[in-house]
Length: 369
Image (cartoon, rainbow, N blue to C red; front, side, top):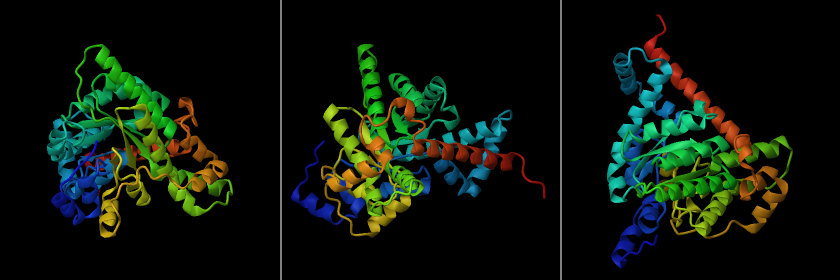
């Protein structure tokens, strides 16, 4: 996708803050890594055309606004008298998601469905059941016309991704940190789209995206070098996630995949600035967006500027899990769920789910005073 501008439009873009300038001059799409309505409204002002949610984000957004969500949870409990705390918690997530999706409808309509989507994540407790994941994805896709559903990029999750995509669900692959995971998801989405076409099903813009949580890959590699007592230039570890994202983007372009790479889990500004110019999605947490705009960062296209080969060489030679994450055949699908960053993140999502249950429990059965 090329963006061309007149001289006056170019001059106007130069006056914009970095995020808005990138949105105005490149195909790189900005999404907000939260469904919190206050943050999302401000992010849309920066040029955001999408948003994401997961159990951690949902719990944070709901717990941050007890004045709003206390009465809402009480209302949901009254409307669903037999529902337990987990069911009510997920009904609250659906409510949060529908509110955020409405804010994004203008961008959805303007882009023909490519952007303007709100991500809803499937229940992490279903991670061992492909059919249950796909069925829940279909349910979530019906909450609003611009819903995109997150399913983990594990071996079982990718089976669910292909099934749900075939059934007409817009997909955002999550719990994804490596090039092998991204490629496997991209291939599954291609199979689903081809099967739909062969069966005469509706062809439309699904806006499929494939996340690589670059910062969480960096976190895991920093842990492994400490664990294994490896001395390496610490600055090189800040480039690991960026290198994986750039490599996955290159492969997706070469293979003609119809899904886009999405950069998430920010730990440094490189996970935005080094990807600007690509036909992909960057999804920083809101505070990272504010920080990027507060600094004189360039919004020039750098997607095709390679990471220093010396950095890549040292990471491959010295950090085994970087090689597994960077090379497209570095992991087999059966290894996706047990890769350190995957297991760590899935545990965090499961923990957030339990915290959401506890939050609802405090509304249903308040502590006696």
